[in-house]
Image (tube, rainbow over all chains, first blue to last red; front, side, top):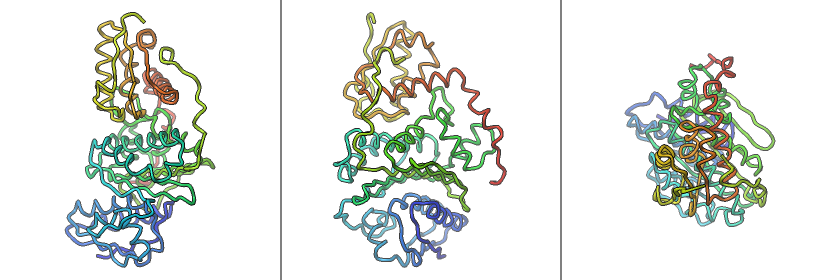
Length: 289
Length: 119
């Protein structure tokens, strides 16, 4: 069966388009799915991660997935970031060094993921990023990655990719999973029948965590928000019907018209931020407790 | 602090990366064992390359579920953390104190937020 893929930017409409594709293909089993890019005018490279959530579900149901009518410019983007390689199409060398390649990480592969970041981030703006910004970026991405493993219940792993925009001084990094979604975890934990949007808002409150264990949690996303605010970057969280966006200009949460079967976090940082992290209050090791 | 035993995190977990909850649990188990035996503890983060809140929640935040705030304050010391990581640890500790003091009340404010528009 043929399924059209519309224009996909990393925004509400783009995520809705991917969620629509997920919903349209959700019943397909033992069949073939041709993702038709004929009407796609643009595809943000980092959106490969949420798109793979759709692909992996199709493959879980033993469907044959192929790409059709891919415009040349989009093909180049998706070859350079290695997304098309997972669909058995040849990779193209990224001579501009602006992509962080699409990659699938399995459960507990957090140290491998750290190696991936160390390998690919340094030439994507990190050379001009301050040491502190670089560290905060790594910490933020690792918090999201670890959260995905702890909370998502994804059996397909975690899908990552990124894109550096040297002229705009922006670095986008996206982590997606095909797990149960924030809504399901929050509903189970609180016993409340929250919507996807409310569940994302709940998860963003400092100290809120759906982890059922002896130790506290619920700091990761709040720390990322603080970092993004200082850096004047952007944070997007998409989970099931919920689309959340935060930047220094404010935050919004909106319900998408379709169900995205998992969770996706997109972090965009301003790589020209030079010194906003240096001022920290003095604390010492025996009085901190 | 008299006769404190130093727990070298990098050597204990076998990695300079403090980024997984499993490694955090290993550190917590050791700290709990020592504190339960009446020892004073110095936690050394020397040679740590990367540290995230998830690890600290498990390794140190969890102490407040087993020991009183006064006990932790009197018997645990941290060395080898950069200033910014010390700020991160402070956030983790404050969060842990709130969590163990009042973990059930987190959800009360959301009781009116039920939404039936999704299946």
